[in-house]
Amino acid sequence: MGSNTTESKAISRLKELPTAQLRPSALVDFVLFFACDKPAVRLIVDTEECSEAMRFWSIRQGLDFASDRVGFACVGVHSGSAVSILEIDRRVEPHEIELGLALGYPLCCCESMACVGESNIDSRAVEIAAWKFDGEYRRINPQGYRSGGALISHLPCSPVCEASLMIANRARKFLLEHKSESMLSGLFRSLDL
Ligand SMILES: [Zn+2]
Image (cartoon, rainbow, N blue to C red):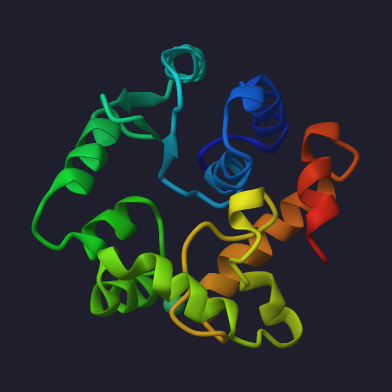
């Protein structure tokens, strides 16, 4: 279990998330945040209401929160981390590794994304969608992320990335232990655990 919170507390914190206002992928990120020591979550907040709901939730949870004017927000464990991550993301110069590490992505995957370049992330996702993930490595297939059905929230560096599999396995264990929780049922429906 991650040190971000205890397991029973993780469930109650997830239950209080204003999920109705968030993208489906946000639940994947927050499962990783609470179960796998992901240090921060970057998310899209479509409306002022959504941003305020997340700010309120973060304050209640004792977490760091920041949002910008273009609809991005960040929740972090450490004080000041949220605003610093949004600042890294706005930089004109390449920042794939720094941003990826701040969001808890494996170094190998951050380096791979740095080679590809953040501006090519969509074409990289298309390329990865054609990869074959065998056996337990199916757990690191990021394809279902946007619809809220994935065990990792980053693009893996290869279809056999061990560091990604470690993250996915922790998330999977957490989900299997809490499969009776209704707010996790959407994740279960779309995942072959
Ligand atoms: Zn990797």
